[in-house]
Length: 260
Image (cartoon, rainbow, N blue to C red; front, side, top):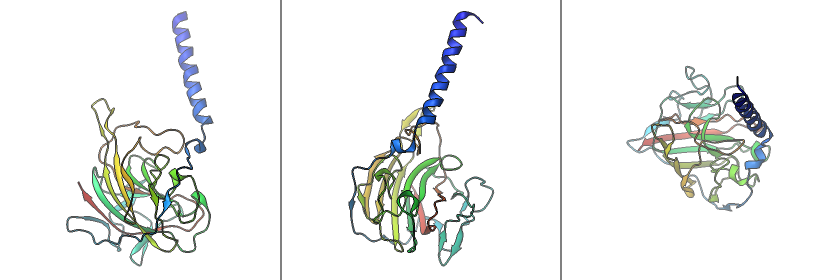
């Protein structure tokens, strides 16, 4: 190897080491924001009947349209009872839809238990991934959290696009009461070279209150570091998160979708 190649190789190795070292030093707190603080609004969950052209993803009976995220050959193992299903925090893991979707309208209702404990991000934490693009927590996350009189970083409270966009208001109902999300999702598109053609966009109504207004996403959710579109993808499942915090698990009901 000549001197020029030796210098080039050394530079690349040092550059790679520096990038890795920088990533190791990055902390989750660096992408947390605490202002603006969304205005608290009183509103009740929107309880809808699925329209005639809806694909009902949960009808209160079973999770036949859902599978485990980390092993899609396994049926969803969360508990179904009394017309709702509840996060399985005993090693169950995340669940996601069998079917993949591009652009859609989605309705989902969720409930934090009345006896919830903990605080901040450790209080009724889950997540709705509007497009699941890998195992674990890969995808675009709309935060689910008990944000009723529970302070945390505002780009991590209920109805935030997690670690990206603060919701326009906070209409979270108190524990034991139901909340609803109504979502219009526009999936990102990519060029032949896998670069972004059009970014993802989302509109969210939280208990009937507009909280994300045609928000343009910076990329999939990134817990540490800045989000970016790092890989191209097409239609994707919708995922629900088993977060693993010590508080009591959340429940869900009345989930339906209309493809657009």
